Image (cartoon, rainbow, N blue to C red; front, side, top):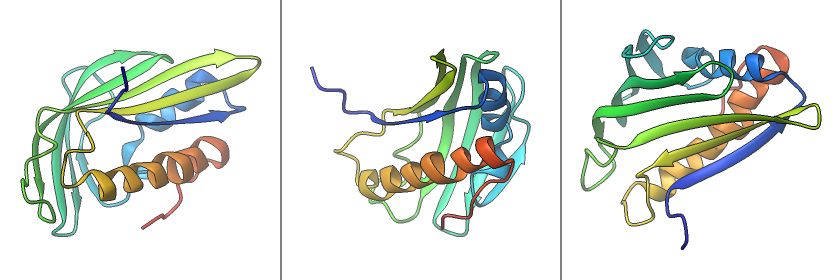
Length: 146
């Protein structure tokens, strides 16, 4: 069975702890305005990119150096026909160590090709994870990708 959720993976030479810490430093890699807390279970934060994208996330799972899961509890994507497509989806970061490297697998569960925003959102996530978050992990500074 084919996995329709959007997913992308990066491999870095940094430790699992460094990857975990970078993920939770959301405002350093997710361009736009991030408000709220992102470090503890049940923390809530919002993301706003101009008038195009608003979403509210709740931290629903945190396993130090292994996994981070956010539940999108509200969303407004002004460029999509169904502006709340993200609501109810989960954003998952899974961290694994192997051969002195750390693999980060990012999956936006529920972001599927049938969504109007899939093309733009999957492209945006690719840039954010592969370029901005990867840069934050490896250099200590996120990259402006938009």
